[in-house]
Length: 337
Ligand SMILES: *Cc1c(COP(=O)(O)O)cnc(C)c1O
Image (tube, rainbow, N blue to C red; front, side, top):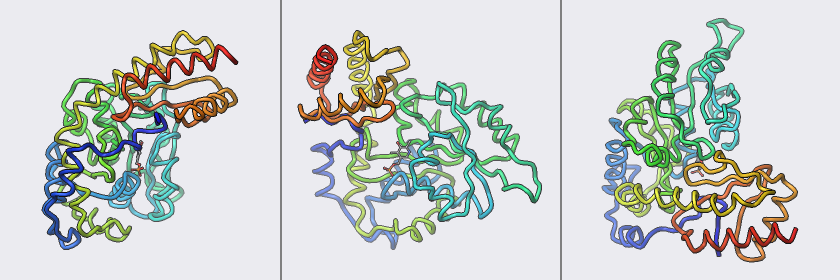
């Protein structure tokens, strides 16, 4: 079976399983699980922050960040297709009475500075208080240009906006640009990172920020039910993820490129350079063809999720042989249809 639906489907590595079974644990709600503490320290250090917090999911770390940074009646500016806005059940509005202000992203995944400025509300009782700007990197597989980050930081500073990064795949962005992830983290007040995607941990995300921010975030995590007891068993996999699995993301990017090269001759797919981004390949064949393709591949134990655009996601459990097989099955499908 070849599963290209998401990099969340990765199974833990052998090293992870060993680390998990040997983990030293305690009760993390009492603050005495040494493995969770180790993971939080490691994450803070890697991303260049004072402190970090381990939580069960990226949805929760993003929500915790918004609840900690914002008050009831505040507003956050966010991409129209951003995970924090579109794919997290409206949590910030539901639990925090924080109003989202979505804006369209540009083709390169950035939010134009003038579009951000245009929606910042004046201090007037008619309006919600514009409080935070949420950026996503990578955004739909796109690693935001490095020069965008100081520019957006400068805008946030000049408008007194807090800057949060949904860095679910921030390590893919760092690997793509060949930079230390700290160079990305440095521009933000807080960063959420998923350990359970290309980094292969079974469960978990970390939220990085200042010491005082993380202290408050810890209270929100408890309220949301994210305080876990012997969480060291899963944090142990997170430690391995951060120590051993960052460089391997390059393989996923290379495999995405190989898949793109294999598919680019298929006329019906209209492949352009924009279709390959970090560990993802996008097909623009329309929903009807996508649904038929998904059914054809599914019958051959190759799983993709078909929507308006099809996103094929490369990860540890997809080998170069798998890429070749997927390419050849796609070619057969389009030749026959
Ligand atoms: C996966 C993801 C998250 C968090 O997802 P969880 O499944 O809740 O861990 C957040 N933002 C982006 C961009 C993501 O891809």
